[in-house]
Image 1 (cartoon, rainbow over the protein chains, first blue to last red):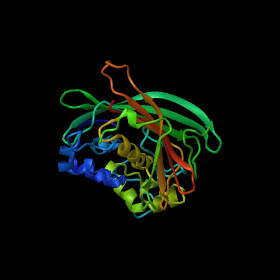
Image 2: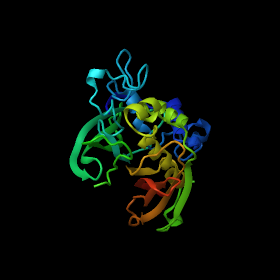
Image 3: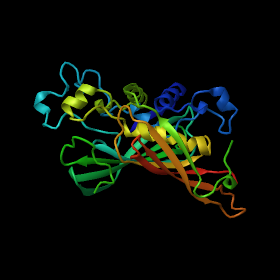
Image 4: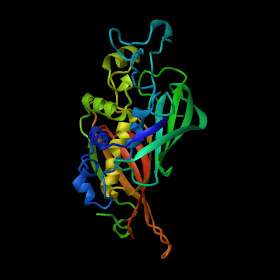
Length: 179
Length: 144
């Protein structure tokens, strides 16, 4: 995902830590954090995923005034003429659609409350496997570099692997191991 | 407290329950916090009637985020160098996840090199049936 400007805010860190069920005070308690080795509130290891909130084009967020594929009056908001029989959206946190197969991060320095990052995403490798239940599996990698917006310093490098299946999978979709 | 290379041996491990009886509300929390509003994780009507799954299921990144705690609680805050996982199996409401981290290697740099020791950990998270849902690795900086 790309974001010109991704402010890393203390309240968002607190909400994110609650959502993943991590009570570590380093994510919410400024007094604790000031007295700690790292010296400030930092973000949990997977926090950069929330840069999606700052990506104007992120496809898994409803846009004001646009149809959304989740339920409303009907079980899906995708207009009937656009449906292809396998349901509306799919999607995932991975490589721009499909299911999320793998996620990898490299940390170049701690990500701190008060930082402002820029995120630039580029495509990586693509490959295929044949799955037992789902036909051909198309894997694709996306690499996102999160940099300090002021200095250009690299803070986190993220590599996502997404997988798309040939057929709709009705249960227990494949992980990257299936082959 | 920072962890020292001398505190660790290959094979040392830690285990913790990182999700207990996963609720749909936690999936809503994670959707809101992460910005991933895919209805497959929060919209039972869409997920069962349109997408054809038995119920909503967890974001893979929620399992990865919850699993991270077994690592950061051990190595300390701000010490992680890398963390990567494969999403092996879906996680459903009601699931209880147990994460286990195991020391695979401790790399001690040559004296005087100025580099820090680094621990390499294997991480696996299993559900209440003993099935792996997330597997991965992490590296972290240690004190000498």
